[in-house]
Image 1 (cartoon, rainbow, N blue to C red):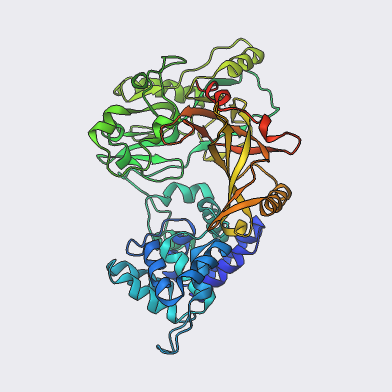
Image 2 (cartoon, rainbow, N blue to C red):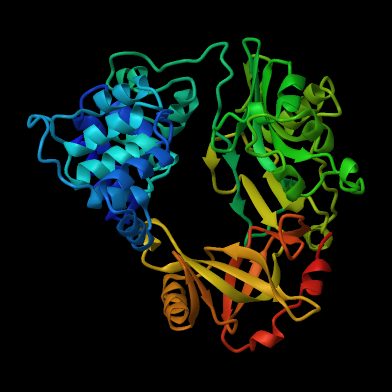
Length: 533
Protein backbone atom coordinates (compact mmCIF):
# COMPACT_ATOMS: atom_id res chain seq x y z
CA UNK A 1 0.00 0.00 0.00
CA UNK A 2 2.91 2.35 0.68
CA UNK A 3 4.09 2.32 -2.93
CA UNK A 4 0.57 3.11 -4.16
CA UNK A 5 0.05 5.89 -1.61
CA UNK A 6 3.41 7.42 -2.58
CA UNK A 7 2.36 7.25 -6.24
CA UNK A 8 -0.90 9.09 -5.53
CA UNK A 9 0.91 11.76 -3.50
CA UNK A 10 3.39 12.30 -6.32
CA UNK A 11 0.65 12.48 -8.97
CA UNK A 12 -1.31 15.04 -6.96
CA UNK A 13 1.67 17.37 -6.74
CA UNK A 14 2.86 17.29 -10.34
CA UNK A 15 1.26 18.95 -13.36
CA UNK A 16 3.74 17.59 -15.90
CA UNK A 17 2.24 14.97 -18.19
CA UNK A 18 5.62 13.36 -18.87
CA UNK A 19 6.39 13.18 -15.17
CA UNK A 20 3.05 11.48 -14.53
CA UNK A 21 3.75 8.96 -17.30
CA UNK A 22 7.12 8.15 -15.75
CA UNK A 23 5.74 7.90 -12.20
CA UNK A 24 3.02 5.47 -13.24
CA UNK A 25 5.40 3.50 -15.44
CA UNK A 26 7.94 3.09 -12.64
CA UNK A 27 5.21 1.93 -10.26
CA UNK A 28 3.96 -0.68 -12.73
CA UNK A 29 7.47 -2.01 -13.39
CA UNK A 30 8.56 -2.13 -9.75
CA UNK A 31 5.38 -3.38 -8.04
CA UNK A 32 4.69 -7.14 -7.88
CA UNK A 33 1.60 -8.91 -9.18
CA UNK A 34 -1.31 -8.72 -8.52
CA UNK A 35 -0.90 -5.39 -6.67
CA UNK A 36 0.18 -3.45 -9.76
CA UNK A 37 -2.81 -4.79 -11.69
CA UNK A 38 -5.22 -3.50 -9.06
CA UNK A 39 -3.32 -0.21 -8.97
CA UNK A 40 -3.67 0.11 -12.75
CA UNK A 41 -7.38 -0.71 -12.45
CA UNK A 42 -7.80 2.08 -9.88
CA UNK A 43 -5.99 4.58 -12.10
CA UNK A 44 -8.15 3.68 -15.11
CA UNK A 45 -11.45 3.65 -13.18
CA UNK A 46 -12.06 -0.06 -13.77
CA UNK A 47 -11.80 -1.21 -10.14
CA UNK A 48 -15.16 -1.80 -8.48
CA UNK A 49 -15.71 -2.48 -4.77
CA UNK A 50 -19.51 -2.52 -4.46
CA UNK A 51 -19.61 -2.92 -0.67
CA UNK A 52 -17.97 0.46 0.01
CA UNK A 53 -20.12 3.52 -0.62
CA UNK A 54 -19.51 7.19 0.19
CA UNK A 55 -22.22 6.99 2.86
CA UNK A 56 -20.24 4.27 4.66
CA UNK A 57 -17.11 6.47 4.69
CA UNK A 58 -19.09 9.38 6.10
CA UNK A 59 -20.70 7.13 8.71
CA UNK A 60 -17.44 5.73 10.12
CA UNK A 61 -15.88 9.21 10.03
CA UNK A 62 -18.75 10.65 12.08
CA UNK A 63 -18.16 7.92 14.70
CA UNK A 64 -14.47 8.84 15.12
CA UNK A 65 -14.48 12.60 14.46
CA UNK A 66 -16.73 15.38 15.72
CA UNK A 67 -19.27 15.83 12.86
CA UNK A 68 -19.11 19.63 13.01
CA UNK A 69 -15.32 19.56 12.72
CA UNK A 70 -15.56 16.92 9.99
CA UNK A 71 -17.86 18.90 7.71
CA UNK A 72 -16.23 22.26 8.36
CA UNK A 73 -12.93 20.65 7.38
CA UNK A 74 -14.55 19.01 4.35
CA UNK A 75 -15.78 22.41 3.19
CA UNK A 76 -12.24 23.77 3.39
CA UNK A 77 -10.35 20.76 2.00
CA UNK A 78 -12.91 20.05 -0.74
CA UNK A 79 -12.53 16.26 -0.68
CA UNK A 80 -14.06 13.86 1.86
CA UNK A 81 -11.42 11.14 1.47
CA UNK A 82 -8.58 13.60 2.08
CA UNK A 83 -10.44 15.12 5.04
CA UNK A 84 -11.02 11.73 6.69
CA UNK A 85 -7.42 10.69 6.02
CA UNK A 86 -6.13 13.79 7.81
CA UNK A 87 -8.57 13.78 10.73
CA UNK A 88 -8.73 10.03 11.46
CA UNK A 89 -7.48 9.49 15.04
CA UNK A 90 -4.43 7.27 15.44
CA UNK A 91 -5.37 4.01 17.11
CA UNK A 92 -3.58 3.16 20.35
CA UNK A 93 -4.32 -0.53 19.87
CA UNK A 94 -4.15 -2.95 16.99
CA UNK A 95 -1.67 -5.25 15.35
CA UNK A 96 1.74 -3.51 15.16
CA UNK A 97 2.95 -5.43 12.11
CA UNK A 98 0.02 -4.12 10.03
CA UNK A 99 0.96 -0.81 8.44
CA UNK A 100 1.02 0.79 5.01
CA UNK A 101 4.26 -1.05 4.19
CA UNK A 102 2.85 -4.51 4.88
CA UNK A 103 -0.81 -4.11 3.83
CA UNK A 104 -0.97 -5.04 0.15
CA UNK A 105 -3.45 -3.58 -2.32
CA UNK A 106 -4.48 -7.06 -3.40
CA UNK A 107 -5.36 -7.97 0.21
CA UNK A 108 -7.40 -4.78 0.59
CA UNK A 109 -9.31 -5.32 -2.65
CA UNK A 110 -9.99 -9.01 -2.05
CA UNK A 111 -11.05 -8.44 1.56
CA UNK A 112 -13.42 -5.58 0.74
CA UNK A 113 -14.85 -7.39 -2.28
CA UNK A 114 -15.65 -10.44 -0.18
CA UNK A 115 -17.38 -8.52 2.60
CA UNK A 116 -21.01 -7.47 2.80
CA UNK A 117 -22.22 -3.86 2.78
CA UNK A 118 -23.20 -4.30 6.41
CA UNK A 119 -19.73 -5.46 7.43
CA UNK A 120 -17.71 -3.24 5.06
CA UNK A 121 -17.63 -0.09 7.28
CA UNK A 122 -16.12 -2.04 10.20
CA UNK A 123 -13.52 -3.69 7.96
CA UNK A 124 -12.63 -0.34 6.38
CA UNK A 125 -12.30 1.33 9.80
CA UNK A 126 -9.95 -1.42 10.99
CA UNK A 127 -7.74 -0.91 7.96
CA UNK A 128 -7.69 2.87 8.51
CA UNK A 129 -6.55 2.29 12.09
CA UNK A 130 -3.30 0.73 10.87
CA UNK A 131 -2.30 3.30 8.26
CA UNK A 132 -0.77 6.76 8.31
CA UNK A 133 -2.49 9.75 6.66
CA UNK A 134 -1.00 9.00 3.24
CA UNK A 135 -2.01 5.36 3.43
CA UNK A 136 -5.52 6.26 4.61
CA UNK A 137 -5.93 8.62 1.67
CA UNK A 138 -4.84 5.90 -0.77
CA UNK A 139 -7.13 3.32 0.85
CA UNK A 140 -10.21 5.56 0.72
CA UNK A 141 -9.55 6.57 -2.87
CA UNK A 142 -9.03 2.94 -3.82
CA UNK A 143 -12.18 1.78 -2.03
CA UNK A 144 -14.52 4.47 -3.37
CA UNK A 145 -13.10 4.44 -6.91
CA UNK A 146 -12.63 8.21 -7.21
CA UNK A 147 -8.93 9.01 -7.32
CA UNK A 148 -9.01 12.57 -8.73
CA UNK A 149 -5.23 12.82 -8.95
CA UNK A 150 -5.05 14.38 -12.40
CA UNK A 151 -4.88 11.08 -14.29
CA UNK A 152 -7.45 9.82 -16.77
CA UNK A 153 -7.75 6.30 -18.14
CA UNK A 154 -6.01 7.11 -21.41
CA UNK A 155 -2.99 8.61 -19.61
CA UNK A 156 -2.68 5.52 -17.38
CA UNK A 157 -2.84 3.20 -20.41
CA UNK A 158 -0.27 5.38 -22.19
CA UNK A 159 2.00 5.06 -19.15
CA UNK A 160 1.60 1.28 -19.18
CA UNK A 161 2.37 1.10 -22.90
CA UNK A 162 5.38 3.42 -22.60
CA UNK A 163 6.79 1.53 -19.63
CA UNK A 164 6.82 -1.78 -21.48
CA UNK A 165 7.52 -0.56 -25.01
CA UNK A 166 4.05 -1.29 -26.41
CA UNK A 167 1.75 0.64 -28.75
CA UNK A 168 -1.05 2.25 -26.75
CA UNK A 169 -3.57 1.53 -29.51
CA UNK A 170 -2.69 -2.16 -29.25
CA UNK A 171 -3.32 -1.93 -25.50
CA UNK A 172 -6.66 -0.22 -26.09
CA UNK A 173 -7.63 -2.91 -28.58
CA UNK A 174 -7.59 -5.68 -25.96
CA UNK A 175 -8.30 -3.64 -22.82
CA UNK A 176 -12.05 -4.17 -22.62
CA UNK A 177 -11.75 -7.92 -23.01
CA UNK A 178 -9.69 -8.11 -19.81
CA UNK A 179 -10.23 -7.24 -16.17
CA UNK A 180 -8.31 -6.56 -12.94
CA UNK A 181 -5.66 -7.52 -12.01
CA UNK A 182 -4.79 -7.79 -15.75
CA UNK A 183 -2.49 -10.83 -15.47
CA UNK A 184 -2.71 -11.50 -19.24
CA UNK A 185 -1.78 -7.88 -19.97
CA UNK A 186 1.38 -7.98 -17.85
CA UNK A 187 2.33 -11.41 -19.20
CA UNK A 188 2.19 -9.92 -22.72
CA UNK A 189 4.01 -6.74 -21.66
CA UNK A 190 6.89 -8.68 -20.13
CA UNK A 191 7.20 -11.21 -22.98
CA UNK A 192 5.77 -14.25 -21.21
CA UNK A 193 2.77 -14.56 -23.53
CA UNK A 194 1.47 -13.23 -26.87
CA UNK A 195 -0.92 -10.28 -27.13
CA UNK A 196 -4.30 -11.24 -25.63
CA UNK A 197 -7.17 -11.63 -28.07
CA UNK A 198 -10.92 -11.41 -27.61
CA UNK A 199 -12.75 -13.76 -29.95
CA UNK A 200 -16.54 -13.92 -30.09
CA UNK A 201 -16.76 -11.29 -27.33
CA UNK A 202 -18.43 -7.89 -27.91
CA UNK A 203 -15.46 -5.78 -26.79
CA UNK A 204 -14.98 -2.04 -27.16
CA UNK A 205 -12.58 -0.61 -29.75
CA UNK A 206 -11.10 2.90 -29.37
CA UNK A 207 -12.95 5.65 -31.25
CA UNK A 208 -11.45 7.73 -34.03
CA UNK A 209 -11.55 11.37 -32.96
CA UNK A 210 -11.35 14.71 -34.75
CA UNK A 211 -9.30 17.87 -34.41
CA UNK A 212 -11.08 21.25 -34.23
CA UNK A 213 -11.01 22.91 -37.63
CA UNK A 214 -10.18 26.37 -36.28
CA UNK A 215 -8.52 28.39 -39.08
CA UNK A 216 -7.83 25.40 -41.33
CA UNK A 217 -9.46 25.28 -44.77
CA UNK A 218 -9.70 22.03 -46.70
CA UNK A 219 -10.64 20.98 -50.20
CA UNK A 220 -14.05 19.36 -50.61
CA UNK A 221 -12.47 17.20 -53.30
CA UNK A 222 -10.40 15.55 -50.57
CA UNK A 223 -12.87 15.78 -47.67
CA UNK A 224 -16.48 14.70 -47.26
CA UNK A 225 -18.79 16.78 -45.07
CA UNK A 226 -21.57 15.48 -42.84
CA UNK A 227 -23.60 16.86 -39.99
CA UNK A 228 -22.28 16.57 -36.43
CA UNK A 229 -25.24 15.58 -34.26
CA UNK A 230 -25.74 16.58 -30.64
CA UNK A 231 -26.25 13.30 -28.80
CA UNK A 232 -23.65 10.98 -27.34
CA UNK A 233 -21.12 9.06 -29.41
CA UNK A 234 -21.64 5.30 -29.14
CA UNK A 235 -20.20 2.10 -30.48
CA UNK A 236 -22.50 -0.80 -31.30
CA UNK A 237 -20.91 -4.25 -31.07
CA UNK A 238 -22.52 -7.61 -31.81
CA UNK A 239 -20.38 -10.74 -31.44
CA UNK A 240 -20.88 -14.24 -30.09
CA UNK A 241 -24.63 -13.72 -29.93
CA UNK A 242 -24.27 -10.72 -27.59
CA UNK A 243 -24.82 -7.00 -28.17
CA UNK A 244 -23.17 -4.13 -26.31
CA UNK A 245 -23.68 -0.38 -26.57
CA UNK A 246 -20.55 1.46 -25.46
CA UNK A 247 -20.08 5.15 -24.68
CA UNK A 248 -17.09 7.13 -25.91
CA UNK A 249 -15.21 6.26 -22.68
CA UNK A 250 -15.87 2.55 -23.12
CA UNK A 251 -18.65 2.30 -20.53
CA UNK A 252 -21.29 -0.33 -21.25
CA UNK A 253 -24.62 1.56 -21.43
CA UNK A 254 -26.66 -1.27 -22.97
CA UNK A 255 -28.88 -1.47 -19.89
CA UNK A 256 -29.94 2.15 -20.28
CA UNK A 257 -30.81 1.65 -23.96
CA UNK A 258 -32.31 -1.85 -24.27
CA UNK A 259 -34.43 -0.75 -27.25
CA UNK A 260 -31.27 -0.05 -29.26
CA UNK A 261 -29.31 -3.07 -28.02
CA UNK A 262 -32.13 -5.49 -28.76
CA UNK A 263 -32.51 -4.14 -32.31
CA UNK A 264 -28.84 -4.69 -33.26
CA UNK A 265 -28.51 -8.42 -34.00
CA UNK A 266 -26.08 -8.48 -36.93
CA UNK A 267 -22.43 -9.31 -36.29
CA UNK A 268 -20.35 -6.19 -36.70
CA UNK A 269 -19.08 -2.99 -35.06
CA UNK A 270 -20.62 0.41 -35.86
CA UNK A 271 -19.86 3.99 -34.80
CA UNK A 272 -22.66 6.53 -34.45
CA UNK A 273 -24.56 9.13 -32.43
CA UNK A 274 -27.19 8.08 -29.92
CA UNK A 275 -30.25 10.34 -30.19
CA UNK A 276 -33.96 10.48 -29.32
CA UNK A 277 -36.56 10.59 -32.09
CA UNK A 278 -37.61 14.19 -32.53
CA UNK A 279 -40.86 13.39 -34.32
CA UNK A 280 -42.25 12.28 -30.97
CA UNK A 281 -41.13 15.60 -29.47
CA UNK A 282 -42.72 17.71 -32.22
CA UNK A 283 -39.41 18.32 -34.01
CA UNK A 284 -39.43 18.83 -37.76
CA UNK A 285 -37.72 16.34 -40.07
CA UNK A 286 -34.67 18.28 -41.34
CA UNK A 287 -31.11 17.52 -42.41
CA UNK A 288 -31.74 13.82 -42.88
CA UNK A 289 -34.07 12.93 -40.03
CA UNK A 290 -35.86 14.40 -37.04
CA UNK A 291 -33.84 14.23 -33.82
CA UNK A 292 -34.73 15.82 -30.50
CA UNK A 293 -32.40 17.99 -28.43
CA UNK A 294 -29.83 16.65 -26.02
CA UNK A 295 -32.21 17.64 -23.24
CA UNK A 296 -34.59 14.89 -24.42
CA UNK A 297 -31.76 12.34 -24.50
CA UNK A 298 -30.83 13.25 -20.92
CA UNK A 299 -34.12 11.77 -19.75
CA UNK A 300 -32.67 8.37 -20.69
CA UNK A 301 -29.03 8.74 -19.63
CA UNK A 302 -27.80 6.96 -16.52
CA UNK A 303 -30.95 4.93 -15.91
CA UNK A 304 -30.34 1.33 -14.92
CA UNK A 305 -34.00 0.43 -15.30
CA UNK A 306 -36.01 2.02 -18.10
CA UNK A 307 -39.80 1.88 -17.87
CA UNK A 308 -42.05 1.15 -20.83
CA UNK A 309 -43.43 4.67 -20.45
CA UNK A 310 -39.94 6.14 -20.78
CA UNK A 311 -39.16 3.92 -23.78
CA UNK A 312 -42.32 5.15 -25.46
CA UNK A 313 -41.92 8.82 -24.60
CA UNK A 314 -38.22 9.03 -25.56
CA UNK A 315 -37.50 6.39 -28.22
CA UNK A 316 -33.76 6.10 -28.83
CA UNK A 317 -32.04 5.50 -32.15
CA UNK A 318 -28.51 5.68 -33.55
CA UNK A 319 -27.47 7.86 -36.46
CA UNK A 320 -24.58 5.90 -37.95
CA UNK A 321 -21.24 7.49 -38.83
CA UNK A 322 -18.90 4.63 -39.68
CA UNK A 323 -18.31 0.87 -39.70
CA UNK A 324 -15.28 -0.81 -38.09
CA UNK A 325 -16.15 -4.48 -38.56
CA UNK A 326 -18.36 -5.84 -41.34
CA UNK A 327 -19.51 -9.18 -39.97
CA UNK A 328 -16.22 -10.69 -38.71
CA UNK A 329 -14.05 -8.67 -41.09
CA UNK A 330 -11.94 -5.82 -39.65
CA UNK A 331 -12.19 -3.03 -42.26
CA UNK A 332 -10.67 -0.14 -40.29
CA UNK A 333 -7.70 0.03 -42.69
CA UNK A 334 -9.97 0.67 -45.69
CA UNK A 335 -10.40 4.31 -46.82
CA UNK A 336 -13.41 6.24 -45.51
CA UNK A 337 -15.08 6.31 -48.96
CA UNK A 338 -15.08 2.50 -49.14
CA UNK A 339 -16.24 2.14 -45.53
CA UNK A 340 -19.10 4.54 -46.25
CA UNK A 341 -20.33 2.31 -49.10
CA UNK A 342 -20.15 -0.72 -46.86
CA UNK A 343 -21.92 1.14 -44.06
CA UNK A 344 -24.80 2.04 -46.39
CA UNK A 345 -25.10 -1.59 -47.47
CA UNK A 346 -24.89 -2.85 -43.87
CA UNK A 347 -27.42 -0.31 -42.55
CA UNK A 348 -29.97 -1.24 -45.22
CA UNK A 349 -30.47 -4.53 -43.35
CA UNK A 350 -31.12 -2.87 -39.99
CA UNK A 351 -34.37 -1.68 -38.38
CA UNK A 352 -34.96 1.85 -39.80
CA UNK A 353 -36.76 2.85 -36.61
CA UNK A 354 -33.55 2.33 -34.63
CA UNK A 355 -30.78 3.02 -37.14
CA UNK A 356 -30.16 5.48 -39.96
CA UNK A 357 -27.09 7.09 -41.55
CA UNK A 358 -25.77 10.59 -40.98
CA UNK A 359 -26.50 12.55 -44.14
CA UNK A 360 -23.63 13.84 -46.29
CA UNK A 361 -23.72 17.55 -47.09
CA UNK A 362 -23.64 18.65 -50.70
CA UNK A 363 -21.74 21.92 -51.16
CA UNK A 364 -20.01 23.32 -54.24
CA UNK A 365 -17.43 25.30 -52.28
CA UNK A 366 -16.02 25.75 -48.81
CA UNK A 367 -17.76 29.13 -48.60
CA UNK A 368 -21.12 27.52 -49.32
CA UNK A 369 -20.40 24.94 -46.61
CA UNK A 370 -19.62 27.73 -44.17
CA UNK A 371 -23.00 29.34 -44.90
CA UNK A 372 -24.75 26.03 -44.27
CA UNK A 373 -22.94 25.67 -40.95
CA UNK A 374 -23.82 29.18 -39.81
CA UNK A 375 -27.50 28.69 -40.64
CA UNK A 376 -27.80 25.22 -39.09
CA UNK A 377 -29.63 25.86 -35.85
CA UNK A 378 -31.53 22.59 -35.72
CA UNK A 379 -31.87 21.52 -32.08
CA UNK A 380 -29.78 18.38 -32.55
CA UNK A 381 -26.97 19.70 -34.79
CA UNK A 382 -23.63 20.70 -33.23
CA UNK A 383 -21.89 21.57 -36.48
CA UNK A 384 -20.14 19.80 -39.34
CA UNK A 385 -17.64 16.94 -39.60
CA UNK A 386 -15.03 16.92 -42.36
CA UNK A 387 -13.53 13.50 -43.12
CA UNK A 388 -10.69 12.82 -45.49
CA UNK A 389 -12.05 10.46 -48.14
CA UNK A 390 -8.98 8.21 -48.05
CA UNK A 391 -8.64 8.10 -44.25
CA UNK A 392 -8.49 4.77 -42.40
CA UNK A 393 -10.31 4.41 -39.08
CA UNK A 394 -7.55 4.91 -36.50
CA UNK A 395 -7.80 5.31 -32.75
CA UNK A 396 -7.43 8.77 -31.25
CA UNK A 397 -6.80 12.07 -33.02
CA UNK A 398 -4.59 11.99 -36.11
CA UNK A 399 -3.74 15.31 -37.73
CA UNK A 400 -5.27 15.89 -41.14
CA UNK A 401 -7.77 13.03 -41.18
CA UNK A 402 -10.97 14.18 -39.44
CA UNK A 403 -11.99 17.69 -38.43
CA UNK A 404 -14.91 18.89 -36.31
CA UNK A 405 -16.30 22.30 -37.21
CA UNK A 406 -18.71 23.24 -34.46
CA UNK A 407 -21.18 26.03 -34.96
CA UNK A 408 -20.34 29.20 -33.06
CA UNK A 409 -21.61 29.15 -29.47
CA UNK A 410 -24.50 31.24 -28.29
CA UNK A 411 -23.74 33.83 -25.62
CA UNK A 412 -25.65 35.68 -22.93
CA UNK A 413 -24.72 38.22 -20.28
CA UNK A 414 -25.70 36.74 -16.93
CA UNK A 415 -25.42 37.87 -13.31
CA UNK A 416 -23.39 35.83 -10.81
CA UNK A 417 -25.66 34.65 -7.98
CA UNK A 418 -23.89 31.85 -6.07
CA UNK A 419 -20.41 30.35 -5.88
CA UNK A 420 -19.24 27.04 -4.44
CA UNK A 421 -15.82 25.67 -3.67
CA UNK A 422 -14.24 23.44 -6.25
CA UNK A 423 -12.67 20.05 -5.62
CA UNK A 424 -9.16 18.69 -5.88
CA UNK A 425 -6.72 21.45 -6.87
CA UNK A 426 -9.53 24.00 -6.76
CA UNK A 427 -10.71 23.11 -3.26
CA UNK A 428 -9.35 26.42 -1.90
CA UNK A 429 -11.09 28.50 -4.57
CA UNK A 430 -14.70 29.41 -5.30
CA UNK A 431 -14.74 28.04 -8.83
CA UNK A 432 -18.29 26.70 -9.40
CA UNK A 433 -20.69 29.47 -10.41
CA UNK A 434 -24.46 29.76 -10.62
CA UNK A 435 -25.72 32.68 -12.69
CA UNK A 436 -29.08 34.08 -13.72
CA UNK A 437 -31.02 36.43 -16.00
CA UNK A 438 -33.82 38.88 -15.30
CA UNK A 439 -37.46 37.87 -15.61
CA UNK A 440 -40.14 40.26 -16.86
CA UNK A 441 -41.10 40.79 -13.22
CA UNK A 442 -37.59 41.98 -12.39
CA UNK A 443 -36.54 38.80 -10.55
CA UNK A 444 -33.16 37.22 -11.10
CA UNK A 445 -33.68 33.54 -11.95
CA UNK A 446 -30.87 30.95 -12.22
CA UNK A 447 -30.31 29.79 -15.80
CA UNK A 448 -27.12 27.74 -15.52
CA UNK A 449 -23.95 26.66 -13.75
CA UNK A 450 -20.38 26.73 -15.00
CA UNK A 451 -17.00 25.77 -13.61
CA UNK A 452 -14.63 26.29 -16.56
CA UNK A 453 -13.85 28.67 -19.39
CA UNK A 454 -11.69 31.06 -17.35
CA UNK A 455 -7.93 31.27 -16.90
CA UNK A 456 -6.09 30.65 -13.62
CA UNK A 457 -5.62 34.38 -13.18
CA UNK A 458 -9.32 35.03 -13.80
CA UNK A 459 -10.15 32.31 -11.23
CA UNK A 460 -8.03 34.08 -8.62
CA UNK A 461 -9.73 37.39 -9.44
CA UNK A 462 -13.20 35.83 -9.20
CA UNK A 463 -12.32 34.13 -5.91
CA UNK A 464 -11.21 37.45 -4.39
CA UNK A 465 -14.33 39.19 -5.68
CA UNK A 466 -16.63 36.51 -4.25
CA UNK A 467 -14.98 36.63 -0.81
CA UNK A 468 -15.34 40.40 -0.76
CA UNK A 469 -18.97 40.47 -1.92
CA UNK A 470 -20.55 37.61 0.03
CA UNK A 471 -23.95 38.37 1.57
CA UNK A 472 -24.88 34.87 2.85
CA UNK A 473 -23.21 31.53 3.47
CA UNK A 474 -24.66 28.03 3.12
CA UNK A 475 -21.87 25.61 4.04
CA UNK A 476 -19.46 25.54 1.07
CA UNK A 477 -21.76 27.81 -0.98
CA UNK A 478 -21.78 31.61 -0.87
CA UNK A 479 -24.51 33.93 -2.09
CA UNK A 480 -22.99 37.08 -3.52
CA UNK A 481 -24.11 40.60 -4.35
CA UNK A 482 -25.97 40.60 -7.65
CA UNK A 483 -23.58 43.01 -9.31
CA UNK A 484 -21.06 41.02 -11.38
CA UNK A 485 -21.89 40.19 -15.00
CA UNK A 486 -20.41 37.13 -16.69
CA UNK A 487 -20.60 36.55 -20.42
CA UNK A 488 -21.60 32.89 -20.69
CA UNK A 489 -21.13 30.82 -23.84
CA UNK A 490 -23.23 27.71 -24.45
CA UNK A 491 -23.90 25.33 -27.32
CA UNK A 492 -27.69 25.46 -27.23
CA UNK A 493 -30.61 26.15 -24.91
CA UNK A 494 -33.78 24.17 -24.29
CA UNK A 495 -36.96 24.34 -22.28
CA UNK A 496 -36.78 22.63 -18.89
CA UNK A 497 -39.43 21.82 -16.31
CA UNK A 498 -36.75 21.14 -13.69
CA UNK A 499 -35.52 24.72 -13.48
CA UNK A 500 -37.47 27.67 -12.14
CA UNK A 501 -36.39 29.78 -15.10
CA UNK A 502 -37.85 27.19 -17.49
CA UNK A 503 -34.64 26.92 -19.53
CA UNK A 504 -31.50 24.79 -19.47
CA UNK A 505 -28.17 25.53 -21.16
CA UNK A 506 -26.06 22.93 -22.96
CA UNK A 507 -22.34 23.07 -22.01
CA UNK A 508 -22.30 26.53 -20.39
CA UNK A 509 -18.88 28.07 -19.73
CA UNK A 510 -17.64 31.49 -18.66
CA UNK A 511 -16.20 33.26 -21.70
CA UNK A 512 -15.64 36.76 -20.27
CA UNK A 513 -15.91 38.75 -17.04
CA UNK A 514 -17.95 41.86 -17.85
CA UNK A 515 -16.75 44.31 -15.19
CA UNK A 516 -17.70 47.05 -17.65
CA UNK A 517 -21.40 46.15 -17.64
CA UNK A 518 -23.95 47.03 -14.90
CA UNK A 519 -25.97 44.06 -13.65
CA UNK A 520 -29.21 45.81 -14.58
CA UNK A 521 -28.14 45.60 -18.23
CA UNK A 522 -27.63 41.82 -18.20
CA UNK A 523 -29.82 39.77 -20.52
CA UNK A 524 -33.46 39.07 -19.79
CA UNK A 525 -34.96 35.60 -19.69
CA UNK A 526 -36.97 36.42 -22.81
CA UNK A 527 -33.68 36.78 -24.73
CA UNK A 528 -32.70 33.22 -23.83
CA UNK A 529 -36.18 31.90 -24.61
CA UNK A 530 -35.90 33.41 -28.08
CA UNK A 531 -32.76 31.31 -28.68
CA UNK A 532 -34.64 28.04 -28.19
CA UNK A 533 -34.94 26.16 -31.48
